[in-house]
Image 1 (cartoon, rainbow, N blue to C red):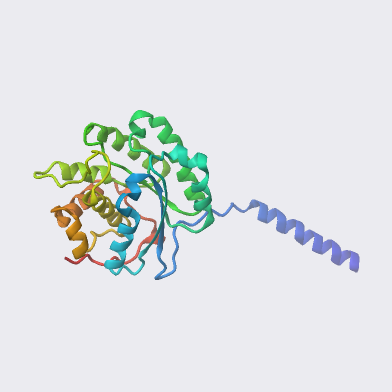
Image 2 (tube, helix red, strand yellow; image 1 turned 90 degrees about the vertical axis):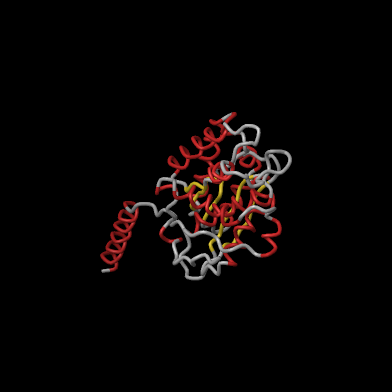
Length: 269
């Protein structure tokens, strides 16, 4: 009797292993789903990200708008960084894998998509794959052209849009919003004196793009402190350029994962 029982138990174990072996490997679920839980965003980039503390500017918008799921942000940045340099250092991989992220924002060196687009492609793919493996939704940070090289924008648009489609990333069209703003008269002062880095107004425009992409609405009215730092730039106009640039994109490039969608708080002015 004991031999029969042992044989039966072994048979059940073998069948169980066979069935388990046939099951598909579980894939990470993009986005956290707990009500009220902050939306966690990791920014990977360089001075185009850390000037004026862009990540905190976007987070502050989410708090001031009383979003039910405000942002929780962190950045891995250093001056002049390319994605290749980030990858070779190894910190980005460690930070992505070290905790849960809902979004990972990916920004390459400003001229790399123009001067060496294949290098941008290689390392955007690597960072985006690491983000997805950890259960995060990649966002590509489409930057602006240098003030003295406005023709750069077409190449930046082309490379980042191609990569966003390929990697199923969202696209933050900051450079396109800058192009809209710089087409009006008088132009808002988006650059500092070096013709490359953003002024406070330039970072505010970038933050408006990220906020509008993540939440699906325009940002709240700026605080008195922010108004004083915008150097006569009209925040409503900047928000409008951000919103128009996002709405001009293909739906796939601006549709956030279902788990990260929430009833948005309408911006007040």
